[in-house]
Length: 121
Image (cartoon, rainbow, N blue to C red; front, side, top):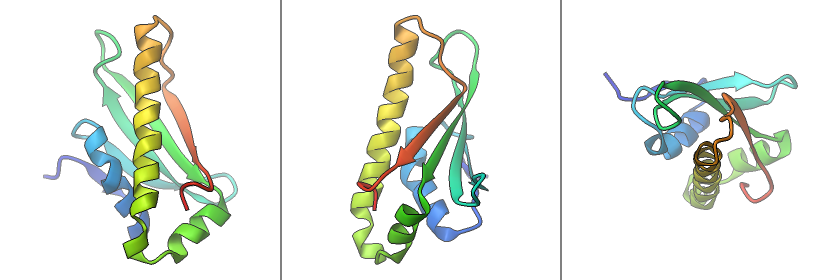
């Protein structure tokens, strides 16, 4: 059995999930979903053990505008490294922010959204 679960309809979303999977614990689920406007998003469902005595289920949803997604998809595979680096940086910053909130005694949200912008693609 694979340590991570990928439920992505398109190969490019699974590729994005695999780029960030090592930032999350095993058993994390990566699910491609449609936003309200129909644009695909990547939902990351993970169990965070580092935010208190009890495990917390947290969902991080990665969204991008249709224009950004179209530019990413039009990009040759060999040019996607920068997009992968931007995605990893955003996810790492988000996880760091959650850790900081917990360290400051603040409530850690169960749902977080990362909006990828022009820097991504």
